[in-house]
Every structure is written in C-alpha cells, then in structure tokens.
Length: 126
Image 1 (cartoon, rainbow, N blue to C red):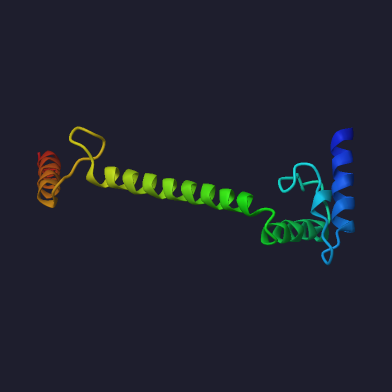
Image 2 (cartoon, rainbow, N blue to C red):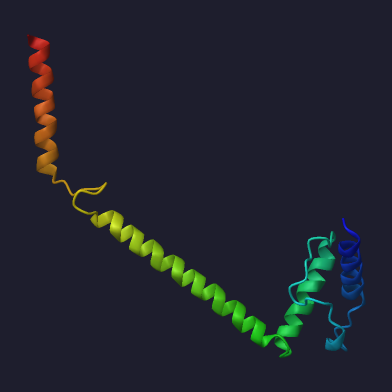
C-alpha cells in the first residue's frame, strides 16, 4: 500500500467514523466524494456507513445531479445492450443467403437424409 493510499484510507476511515447524521457537515466531505475508493475499508460496518452517507447526500439534494447522471448512464447502457441483443438475435434467426445460417425446409432435410441412407444401404448390400 502506498503512502498516499494509506493516507486516503486513514482519512476516509476517520471521516466515516466521525460522521454525524443528526448534524451533517457537507463541506467536510473527503476529496473525490462520492466516488472514493472504499476497497481499503476492511470492515463491513465502515462500508455500510459510507454508503449511508452517500445516500443521505443524494436525498438531501447535494448529489441529485450525480444521481441523475448515474441513472441515465445505466439506463442508456441497458437499453443499448437490449437493442444490440435483439438485433443480433434477429440476424441470427433470419440469416442471409450464402451466410453461415440458411433456411432449410424439413422436406429438403428429409430428402437428403433419405439419399444418405439409400447410398449407405446399397453400399452395404453390394
């Protein structure tokens, strides 16, 4: 752990443990809030407190823009993935002439299987 990381972790841990929910001081938020790296917080309680502080910050109005940006970004990514999956599935289902997938009727498959069986049986009986 680098010295800077250790200092950040120590400051974040002190911040979380000294937070007063009854009298929040939003001017004392740590650098990079709300996107602080919490991976160094080893206790679940500290992580839960940090998330509670973030939630309180959003609800009180200070983080609504950040919240809306995050929700919009996630929604756009989700819609893009769904559209891509639908288009990809449609292309695979329809296929293209000369492409990897072709439409084949059951009659054609039956005829080909019949020809293979006839050729095999005639070779066996010769």
